[in-house]
Image (cartoon, rainbow, N blue to C red):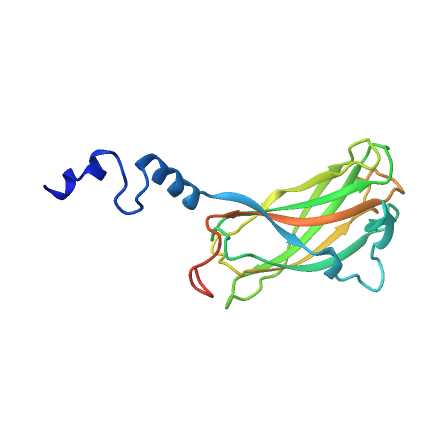
Length: 203
């Protein structure tokens, strides 16, 4: 009997995986899908400058970084992309925060970053500024997004970002006047196209 006429082929089975063709297609779709994930920044590892920095404030039995509403305050940090990163894709920067109270207003944030892959030179830092409105409800877990995407063209797995984040409370456009913002988490939304890399240093 010719190979193509085998009972497995006649019944619609994939000869490589042994699964039915429908199941094999579903598995392939899962393995090759591109999806979003958080590349988290550990707030416990951020650098606080000697002056002009937020302070750790008690919050709900824990602590959060309180950015004041009277003067500019900043932190700096590093982030490394995982081996699952879809090389060349753009990133989005998010911050998770809680407002001090229910007062409505806009909070002005400035993100600076210098982005380089292994063996590349770190370029002059870029700046992105965003006005993020408070939700008008006290103690709400709120997601703020820096809307300008961070270009990922040419970037590879294990790329590094050297960053700073500043609340520019001295700017007139920051209208959450004299109120604290409790920063709880930071992350980059990245696209992934695999669980990791099959080789240690390259994809």
